[in-house]
Length: 379
Length: 120
Image 1 (tube, each protein chain N blue to C red):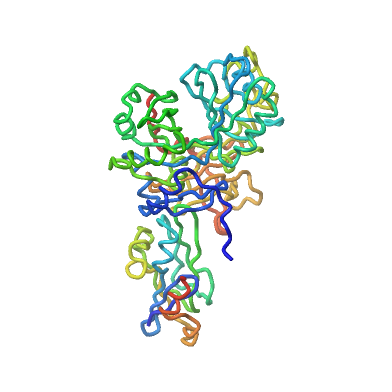
Image 2: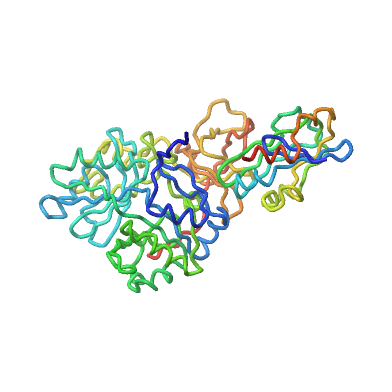
């Protein structure tokens, strides 16, 4: 007897199948890893034109203050993240990190101020835990509402603005990390000028029932091609962006992860609202005095990719590893392998030579600056 | 003679020398290849030994020696352009050639019809 699939499907599942998507399990969802075009072409097309990604598996959570005053929701959220949420103006979005009592990262997320509520976008694999976390700590002052009937699309690439402006001319005036509520094909959408590729682009939250129609219209423009999770991962790695579960987890602190910029100035030592988030003591001490290790970019010196999990050594014949590769692959835009990993802070300078263990041999690696490709945000 | 393994390698025998590659089914399943590691000429392989590595964007996969033999030539073109394995897996995208040790081992391989049957 056939096993019923226990995998969830996004509102765009039928579209993916129609487009010939190669479906794979990801965070409990059946997601397209690629389409017949293949990852290389989908990646390149996103850097040169516009790629359309389904990211509906991610969690979208609304936080509404019981008091009706958004500053109460902002201050409440600040008890869980080190970001400056109070200063987040209406129509703006910011990157934040949920931390635990030892300063480890529980998830990385985007927070948007939509006037009467905050809108969070969290990782798919963490969305249930994140909602529970928010409910446990914020429900006295806020209503936590994981949105159930929304799709989330990402339209990324240098052509994204022109494509979306054909449906909503006002997107031309949006700059990086702006968020607007606007209508696309008659559907009310929350649109942010942001993404996970290093390119200019937009993330579009739309009612599930309206998502496929919007995608069909966007895909009618032949500068837009669908792109899957394979290309999403290769694009974000080139942009030096972290993947929770690979580059970030509960054993990495924001400073170790080179994400101290996500801890707002007022939340740091001497700031108006210093600390007051889980693990703040550890995080603030690391901001003030440094952390023992740091996330860096890495360039394998040969042609072979070095993948996440590979041990890093200070010398070709060193017995004990000094760090680990946390993400690695092939930079399609550059034609060379690239990686990210954690190394001791003393070894974190660009140009430092290290060695990775690859198939039983030691592969020379060089620490390099991030990102690997220039970022094209419209600031 | 063209033979196949259940691991999606093909072998084309010409006298004593066998050319080895991965099948079209395998390249399609792997997706776009970005790196190929070939054995050194002179390497002696037993049947089933990991002989080469093909890497797609997402992951590395081993290519196994279909029969025992000694590597006599590798395809330098594929090292410089891994996409050749995607576009011409059974032709220009061959991986290596080996002088086979024991012709009788070929009997352990599948013919084309039997290989296709394994694909379901």
